[in-house]
Image 1 (tube, rainbow, N blue to C red):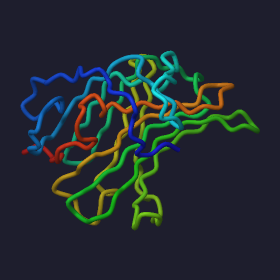
Image 2: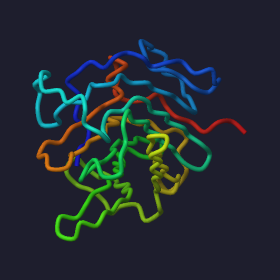
Image 3: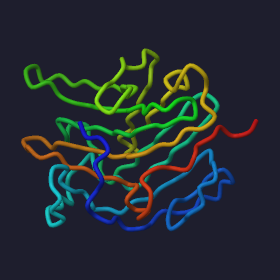
Amino acid sequence: MYLGRAAVLALIPLIMVSACGTCTSLEGSTDRRPVSQLRLRDGVGDVFLADSNDTDKVAKTVRNVDVVAATINRTGRDLQVKITYHDLAPRASRKWNVAFNLLTSGDHFTRIVVWERGQYADTGAWTQGVSVTKATSEDSFGDPCPHEATAKVDYSTRTVTITVPNRCLGRTVPTWIRLADLATSSKAPHMINDYSDNPFNATGESESTPRLVAPAR
């Protein structure tokens, strides 16, 4: 599992400002006002080895990991994170995931969200699912949220959309959510290396979002 590793490459800064009044861009901005939606656009061919700090070890052709865009949307019911890939194929990776951390106004805990798709070595069967786990301390974790977080994979649009319901974010609906350490990871078939991408590095700044709030009704 890949969580919170800072990327070693500066990604091409192509984040674009949306025309939406509740959307924002992170590129070169110190504006941290609360928003309901933000969009990031990332460069192509900037995948790195997850277990290496050697910037020469770049894999430009690994599928199911090279992120080109991300949309993060807060609604009154949930948080939606949509990842768009440069290249996406059903069986291109024997292990493949998206991970990010959530901080909320409701408490001081971090919630770790992981969507993973993988193939069993013994049976060859494929499985996938989303977990939302509360970190109660630096090395202690609670039980996964019993309420269903979901993920939809659309190979025609090269996207994975993860939806985390409010019920996984505390006893009461938090006023704001902050998303941090968004990253993808993939292990290609017959390969031992884990490859990763981190679209937040395109900002050259913080690896967390502004406060995400539900839009006014």
